[in-house]
Amino acid sequence: QLDFQLPVRFDLHYSGPDAVAGDIRRPVMIHRAVLGSVERMFAVLTESCAGKWPLWLSPRQVAVVPVSADQKEYASRVACDLEQAGFETQADLSNSTLPKKIRANQLAQFNYILVVGREEQAEGAVNVRTRDNVVHGKQTLASFVAQLHDEVAAFK
Image 1 (cartoon, one colour):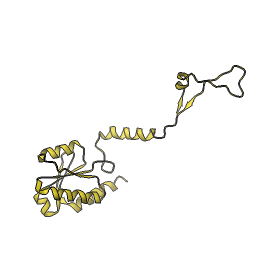
Image 2 (cartoon, helix red, strand yellow):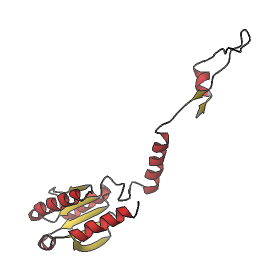
Image 3 (cartoon, one colour):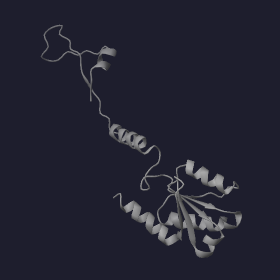
Image 4 (cartoon, helix red, strand yellow):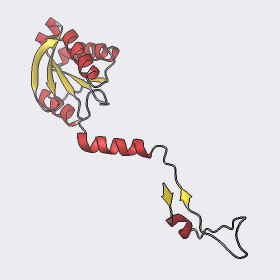
């Protein structure tokens, strides 16, 4: 990138070997922005996604929300299994009510929110919903992990 303004602001001059006596010239500065294009790419991506990052890029991919304190251990185990499968996962073990937990995780822009209750714990399943409050229903953890891997692979 060529910059004609900074040499004027700093009152920069030079005299070349081919210059006639008293002949001074104004330099042109060349800027190199190594990360400029990366920054612009992230700015465009952030603006176009409005903070709702695609799964393959999202820093908050899956939240696991237990229905009650009885399912906190199962929620932690599900979160651990998802972490081992390669996904950024958090278990919401707070004492908030279920609707507040779901809403907080939607506002945090988790791609998927897994609600786990007694039925899900007994069956080794999860109840899947998205950050846009679309409920996909109950499915086994293994099939959900396979679905996530397929979704990530679709972007490669």
